[in-house]
Image (cartoon, rainbow, N blue to C red; front, side, top):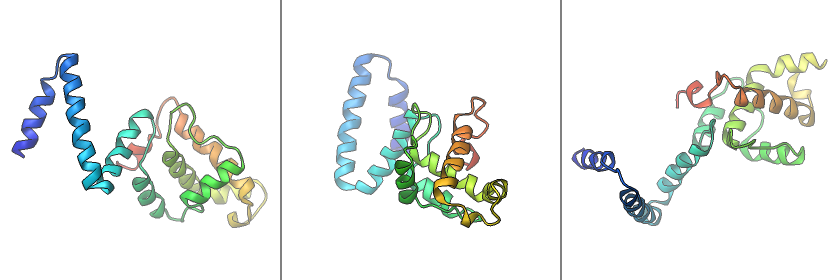
Length: 162
């Protein structure tokens, strides 16, 4: 913990552009070393840093954990959903509001929570009988509504306590 406290003390005292540049240079060197020696952890950290570009984001590791814990189960896996979205020409990241994994979580949550109601609304008894080319655009639109909501009541990180 002593080293962490020292690190935090140094970061808190950064005031000039030259200090920022030096911090970035040292951080970059540390990250290169980290990539070479611990690539799995480096990917984990870069995935989290990548989230800074979005208002709504989860890492793939977080998304897998969330989606696999849904009851009833989500219908589409990560790769299969991406394939369907590409086939249906649905945008996966609208104006950097959300990343693909946040979209996958939101679509999966909608399916888990509302598939029966959606199926009944379109006159089909069992959600598994609704063709993917019908169900995915509906779940996509619902997910987009949640992820883009200006009130941000459905913040995926807050909702899943990340």
